Length: 160
Picture 1 (spheres, rainbow, N blue to C red):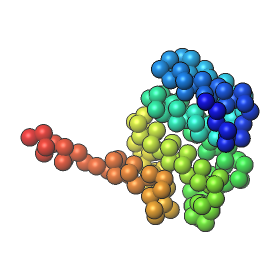
Picture 2 (picture 1 turned 180 degrees about the vertical axis):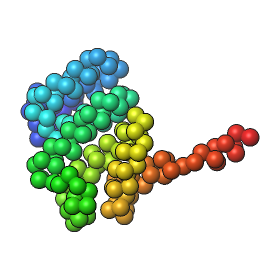
Picture 3 (picture 1 turned 90 degrees about the vertical axis):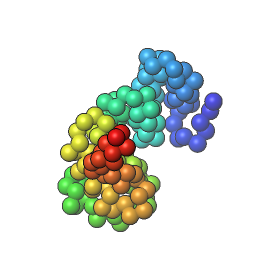
């Protein structure tokens, strides 16, 4: 399997392909993913593949670590402010730009992963922030907010 569109070395592409082909063997595939990250000096596309991989393997702590790296890398490369009130207008104005879309996707993923790991307050903060600029619900924040604010009463009624 060759991933020709990804702008990384053939060795890194091979490692990602090996991770895919050996999906069932957690130890080996984790190693392939880690090697691909190292091989590419943590190329953003490889990091995205890695946090998705760890998410689907239900390794939420590792997925969160990698998604947070994507957010940090883009924040540094684009000189994005930490403060949400300063960051919000930048993201609103540029959310169609590929790098900022990647930032928003990774930031939204951190919210989801934090929720899965039980940090519901931080997850809600992130989801609410993303939702405030995501009028088309492209980044999934609306779903996260809905899940986090769902009371569960409907489920209780059905159980009766």
